[in-house]
Amino acid sequence: MASILNVDQINNAAGTSSITIDSSGKALMPGHVVNVTRVQNTGIDTTLSTSTFTTFFTFDLTATAGNIVYVSSSVPTRGGGTGYQLAALRILAGGTGVWGSGYNGDNNSSASEEPLTDIPVAGSWIWTGSGSNTQTISVQGYTYNGNNKYFGDNNQLAATTTPVFTFMEIAQ
Image (cartoon, rainbow, N blue to C red; front, side):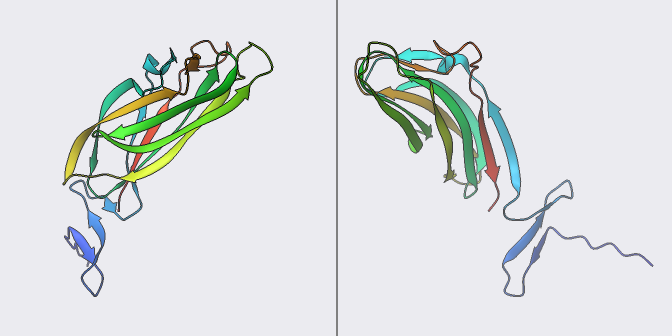
């Protein structure tokens, strides 16, 4: 004779939750991927020549407090002019910086532009707030000096496309 056991959660002997069953019957364990969001926005295809962070684009992302959000991308970047080159990216969640990186180089050989370099985007942070909540994600860029810095597919190689950002929520 078959039996059905109806539970919402399975705990270990000490009472710590190890498996939760969602409303559709799926078993959810720590470390599983909850949601994946891909964002491709042409706002990043631009030229900057400012030494303050400039917002390329924003969007809203919903996740659950305490879960880890992992982001990955690769952003084509190139400097213009001679001298020291620095271009940086950062990501803010709810107005707080959660990731940042950049590239630098020295182009003293001529007035030609710095070669194409990708800024690898790979980082993670713990989602804040309480319960499931939505925060505004901002992707921003920065340059060191008055020389132009090209981001995304702006003034790049013909095969360069607008970068895709992938945000993955991982349950804890």
